[in-house]
Length: 145
Image 1 (cartoon, one colour):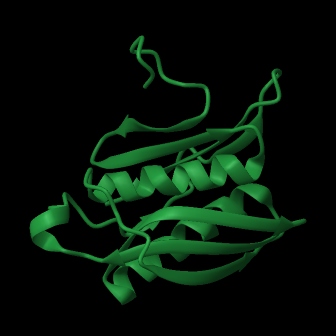
Image 2 (cartoon, helix red, strand yellow):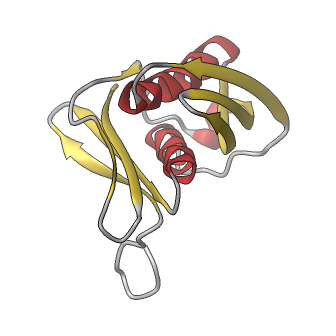
């Protein structure tokens, strides 16, 4: 949110979905929308700052932009779970429907991060990657927690 209490046109937000949590990223490009959604994914787990101490690389390839978005979020969730890390900084390079992403983060510190929940996976529920009439991209789906 900005100083007026309005949600910025760029950035991320959570949206309500019964027992799960929706995440939506917005940006001037599809890459920026995906990166912002990744920040929203991390904020499902913690509101605490996450240090960019270690870098992890991920790759995703799909035949559909919306499925690529799901794979991107699932790759982050996989790295969170297997490395026991949180990520607070993201950079993506896309060529067509191939994505290379860099994730920067740190090991989970339960006392400092106070994890609220553990994301299990991105779902196809409310999945949408689209560009609006003003050229603003959004990428959204529901995260199973």
